Length: 442
Image (cartoon, rainbow, N blue to C red; front, side, top):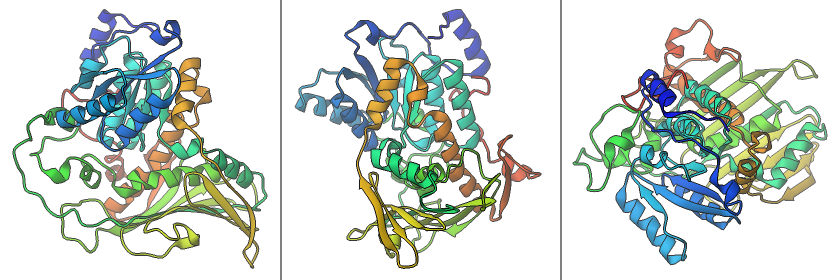
């Protein structure tokens, strides 16, 4: 494990404005019955799922909780009491949590605008990280997260749980084996019925909410309920819309199945916020097309499409039959097509008659995969290492930039910048509010 003394940290803090005290040492689980001690940061919704999934794993214990809303913290402590789990330490400030040398790993289910800074601070503090999707809030942050993971030799898993599905792993092998012929295009679907969020007025910060920490790197704005719990997804300061919420899961599988290990070179995104007059800033209808270079094979270019719809729609490809939502991926090949319609199932249809072909359904355990890599201290065993998560997050960021600028874009995969387009390049990062600054030098 990389080590850093306090004097070195103080010097780095002054240069980067990172203010997390770092106390690094050997992972305690190695000498404590092989127990991995986990801290969960962000405890609503997916965060609650994190702590429950980690608590189920043998030799793993959630020993610390962190949330800026004291009411949420109190609710999670009730969960521990009801399950007769040992009471964890509690924090409202992640900087205090990261001072604890007994914590081996940290999971983040915070709003997107906190993913990068939390991950980088945790890596600097000698903690391994499980961070929710999308990996980053913007493209530049993703690259900084990779740099931090590599510099501090940390295990960093991104929460693309589909990557751990045994069935979907088999589906990807099938696609890349040539059994569907020349697979030239994948289409991701995110058709979710989402009602209007309405409008909410500015109001005093609720008691027990540490709002300044919640804002973190984002600009200072008055508190409203629509910019807070969950609805932050639909505001540009904190979230990336549904393409970065649900859609990034499907784009990740689409990119994986197509065998695309690079960024696209061209893209175009169009859409809008339709039907509702409310506080939402992000589009609820979005159509995006990505073009990738392909060095060999009959298809010289590969295409990845993505579509967000927010209301009543058809079940394309049979995905979501019998339910409201249509969420999945369709792969198109010269011999037929494949449908992946859940986190754990896929089916193939061959020829003009769409004759049923191979199919499978089987789940996996993304949290166990992370813990196995933590125990081995080997990121190569991760099903979604931070670099893979970054490549998929880039897609949702590119789509949003094209949408917001209202035009198609050309992207350089090596430099991760736009060709001769400073207006677009200005949207690769953001201005950070001190002291919550994502450091340029990690």
